[in-house]
Length: 177
Image (tube, rainbow, N blue to C red; front, side, top):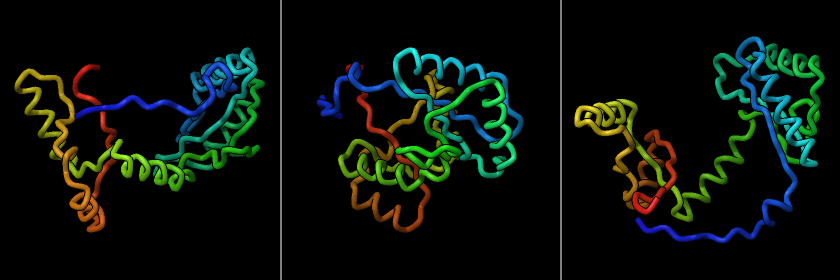
C-alpha cells in the first residue's frame, strides 16, 4: 500500500493553546492515580497558558454509574482541582461523556472510510484468536493480517448493511516505517 504525505492546514502546534484532559471511568471509587494524573495535566496546562478538561470515560455501560461519576467530581474538587470544560460545567466541545459522543465519532469514522484512510474489518473474535494463535505457533509476533483491507468498497458496504458486525481499522503502511 502506498501512503502519501498530507499537509495540515491547522496552525502550527506552537501557536495552538495547550489542552490537557483526564478521562476517568465511573465504574467504582475514584483512584489516587486519577487525582495524580489530573494534577499533573492541570499543572502542565496552566504552565503553558492552556486549559484542563474533564471527560468521563463511561463506555463500560454495564459498570458505569452516576454515583461513581459524582464521586469522581467530588474527589477531584476535594483535592482542589478545577476544570475549564467538563460534564458538569459544559464547554464548546461538548458533550463530555464518552457515551454521548457516538455521533461525532461515527461522522469522523465515515470520513476516514470515504477518504480510504480506513476500512471495515469483519473478523469475528474467534477468527482473530485463531489468527494470533497461528502466528504465535510460527514464532511470529501476533498482528492483524489485513485480510479485509482490500475488500472492495461495494462488498464492504453490502456486508455492513446486512448487519454483519465490524470494526473500523486505520490503513497503515506496511513498509518504510
